[in-house]
Amino acid sequence: MYLPPQFNHPEHALELIRSHPLASLISNDDDGFPFVTHLPMHVETEGADWQMLGHCARANPHWRYLAQRSEALLVFQGPHAFMSTRVYPDLVRVPTWSYLVVHVKVRMQLVDGEEAKDVLLKQLIADHDAPYAAQWRGLPESYTQGMLKAIVAFTGEVVDVKCKIKLNQHRSEAHERMKADYAQGTEQERALAQWMERLGL
Image 1 (spheres, rainbow, N blue to C red):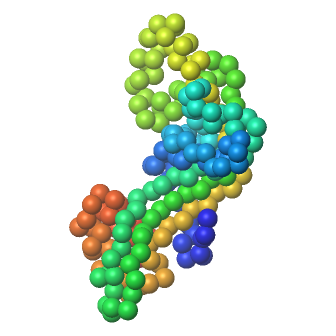
Image 2 (image 1 turned 90 degrees about the vertical axis):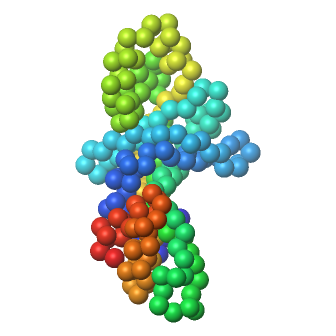
Image 3 (image 1 turned 180 degrees about the horizontal axis):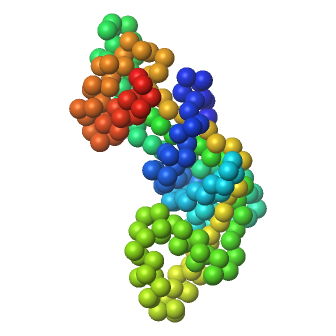
């Protein structure tokens, strides 16, 4: 990812991953072409070490590609929106796009066994719908075992993390109008205005 220093904010990566957990998992297929699966990921941290947990359908060939070539990229997209030139005090400008994104390079390892997959699933459930864990436990074993057999789970050792927050940081003359416009806009734009406030722009 192209990452100019003014947009480099690694300190916000973890928050963005947890608040926008639907990732694009990207690795190469057997022809060397990028293959993408969109799936929620759970992140665990222990000191400086991060681990990503997720799963895909067994019918999805992506897990076979990961078994052969373990390195992959996870992309987490935060809020984003168009930025008009009207935010500038002069006319000799071009429009652009504001966005927040995290790229996580991982080494994937497949998780074997229904019990291990069940533990991993419960971590994902806890992120998004904790009460469902009780419902899952109450389902017939014939059903839950079938569901577990239908997925392939994996963990990803985090090798590198890049977090890009592109909010026109290097154009201070635009910040006041830009923030005001975003604050009156769509849900995505309002989220960008809140990030501008947090960053002191």
